[in-house]
Length: 485
Image (cartoon, rainbow, N blue to C red; front, top):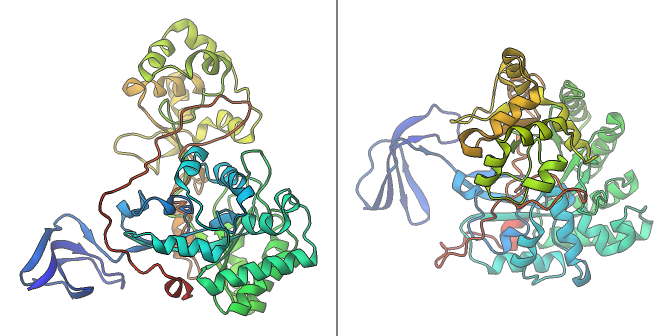
């Protein structure tokens, strides 16, 4: 008799073979049968109508804080993820001097839009060094595996203090000290090192992530720690500006150390074919012996805007901020349906000078009703602007009326990246590239959007802090498991 049998599921085994219907049997810690009709099990689960597949390894998440209190790492585990990799984009919580803890929370809050209040309440700071951070993770029972990368922002601030936090140039001694910390972390089980080189990533005080402007000497100096350790990946988010120079140092680092360098590869509206040049640069680097890996998102990076989310097209209008933002949803909807208030709101413009706010306000051709079921590949003819042209209204009026649908619970979809063409074809081409990997889920991040001192404090979306009474047996999280490249 088997310990566990999953009956009648659609089996997708990860080999590329066609999906098929059948049973999956487990005995002890081993899968002993895939397909066909399995014998009886001590426990049986009806999997008909469900996919039964190997667990997903999500290589780009930001659970660095949540991992210290949530054994399930929701919502990723709900979607079949069995391993998450944290510490991406140069932000994380180790190493951490005691007087830098609040600053690290502010850095994560600004870059990844995770409420600082949740992080401050949830993290108990049982560490200072990165190895101690891994020890703290290992002590906690958990349902899925975790791996962590060493974040540039934390390392720079740990070594250089305020100079590092403010992006001042690193001295040779600074670089050597950072390299030692990274090497120590890799020896303890870190999966790699990460940095951010995009101006979109800023702390809550508006300061770019430490390392954003790091020169090649600093990047190569730290990257050599991966070569010395013999394992680990160098991950980065970058504006790729200028492209030639960015790819030159990535290729040089990989060629010298023998380690992979992975970067976020996305389509953007300002240069819709940049991703093609990026893939060509990856191919050229490979021909010269380097290992540069484009990391591709499985669908557009976008925002869900609505009266119940933390931002929408009218959230920064003076009348909304002054008279409506603090009201319960039902009362807001009632007031927004008043003709006089509607006219005032439609006549106003956003007060914030933040580029993202101005971009959303001026790009209603990229704003779509999400629908039910959700439509994540909407035709351009379904945009707010297209709807306005067909109905003789302004785009602002259409957006306003859509927000009030379903008693104010309607959501609008604003794809920021990977949707310049109005379809998924560029995503498909990027994903099918032989050197690309799927990533960029940002699991655990982006509970809301947009922080600006000039904007009102809007209630954040709920952050789930599960504390179950019984946790499943821990999977391998120890240093030896994490150390494997």
